[in-house]
Image (cartoon, rainbow over all chains, first blue to last red):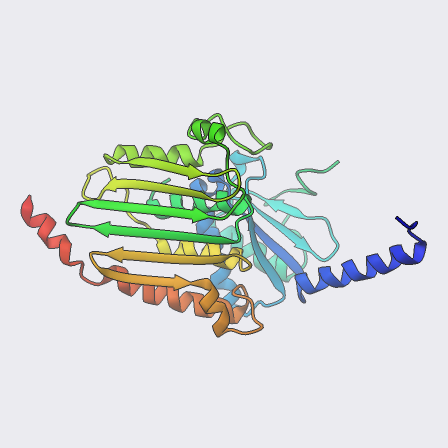
Length: 127
Length: 193
């Protein structure tokens, strides 16, 4: 196999970056609801309902909605993770539809973390 | 889990974690046989025979975040409570099929719950996966194929604002209408008692 040159690496980086932005579309951020068994039992589906309704009502189109599994903090469910641009993901726990709307308005759309509801900043797999 | 629609959401989340691209959910209600069947099949990575034997044990899970896995065990327990059982067929080469049977009129049979919300959550949360949902009730039938919905919205994701509107119409209006229309077997069942 021929040796990789710096140019090759640069090309690879460009092509994967293009791929990534295509996949992500024109999203400003990502809103993830944790749907493990624990989350579902604690009411996570109601949180999803709330977000999808609000997305429709507020015509939010630049935030990607996604679901994922258990984050390992079952006692804090229902949980969500908010990822905006390049900033570290923020996790919120023990949600209710009211808290979810507050987070959507203040953090996801407004840009400032709702400190009294946040569990922490960073990923559960940090380090 | 409070109702069957939450069990469905939970078990389908397993399929998604197993990397499924196609997921089929079939609910059949048969008043004549007093039987409710929920069948979930996927083309995910599957389980080997040994794991299938163990999977209903709550202390078995593929997750590394915690050491207990309750989803399938809870679903099996719900089926058992209403005079039914849960069957798992899986192949290490790919594909799993979960079938849960319930005695429809059993007093401990959990209610169906909000099926529309479960499907909306699954499809909007995983627009890249193709879902087929089929619900039959004594010969009447509701069917939804997310691939067919995608074709109606070229260049748009089902998670986009337009996609969500279409999903809402199908799931919160059409499915609800199907579920709420009179069920011919229902009064017959009541009359027998």
